[in-house]
Image 1 (cartoon, rainbow, N blue to C red):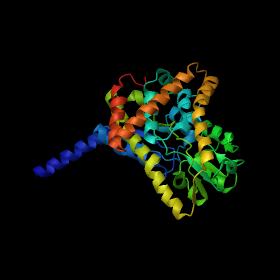
Image 2 (image 1 turned 180 degrees about the horizontal axis):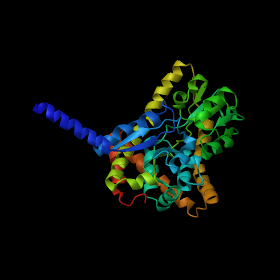
Image 3 (image 1 turned 30 degrees about the horizontal axis):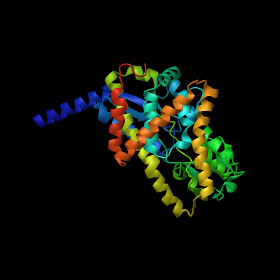
Image 4 (image 1 turned 90 degrees about the vertical axis):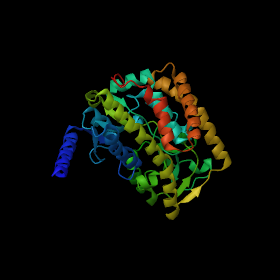
Length: 371
């Protein structure tokens, strides 16, 4: 009888806890095959009740409800309370994040790029002001692997790329393409398959993981491993202001803790594991792996280095940043800092998560952050 009573009391307590839990509507904006669905938002759903003792939970809305292109409206209308926002879709609204995104061609180490982006945004007053104006709160970034050329035609030299129509994920990739005589196409990543299958484009400057995430393994014939940088200008967990203000400072900290853990797991998946899995799939599909010739590689690396100055100039002209070069220098300095930290961690995601907490999140006052 006592045992039965204890069981009933335990179930009642669990029910009460569940009833009292705050469930957040969250959206990755990407299909299940993409790591931002499985290893970013899937992990948030897992981690949130763990770090909050069951006080916070999450309900994930799929891309059929909210896609990446609709994320801004979904957050501002409160349809979504935590969403995966890609700032390069809305550069005029988020110029500081766009500035960091302009430095995409410099990315060589995914964990370092994601961490540098996170520290840059959290510790930048003007960044926080523009996020507040936009109506959201920022909880960290992730990064892709180093982009490569995924094409239907072989590319080994600079001459091979001339005239090719390539899907571009942002301005720096477009600048790179135009520099070598290719034609960039600003097409949403979700539309890459259709555009390539219809012959609208000849390929994509993208993560090799897109072979699996967006089924490009069925269309791509060649992969040229010329380093095109990383896609790190992300706001992985973007919280609508209304949802953020509803949470207590302790709950905000718990959400940030879960987000920080998930961001690192996501980058590990997208930036490293997914690339390895995609390469195996490419081999099985008979896709040809190509290395650029020395002259093409040298010219590409030189362009990436020179593009840092271009990023500052573009940001000054487009967004009115009189101190654009100083902002670029600060971000580049953070990348160097985190390159060292990531090397020291030797790929240990727990160590990287802890350093991010030590260097960034432990210094945040969640009673005032984002407000």
